[in-house]
Image (cartoon, rainbow, N blue to C red):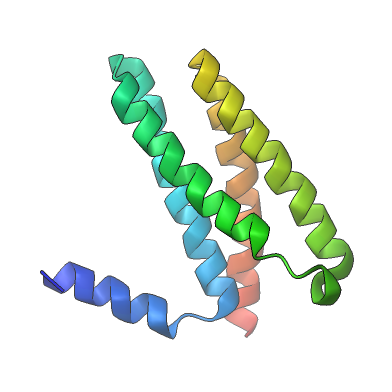
Length: 122
């Protein structure tokens, strides 16, 4: 670790429950999408692509980490939401469409709230 902040983040991630980790994943995706929006505003295509790529990497990790056997209907619903968000992010990237990114951010904020509630109960 190079600095105290990185050490803090590493410790926090190692001690979070699964719902807490998922909520942190949403936080990071939202942060990256906001960065992409800022880059669209600035006309920074390279920066936008970097933020979009990071957001999609995390979202794909959540998608492929779904356990349909244990998660049942909830996992299926999340799968559909994640697929929708991935498509919207890809379209937003192609069209520099900030509205699509904002819509995905709203969906993820709602999901994050549910996972944060669950994390408090675990």
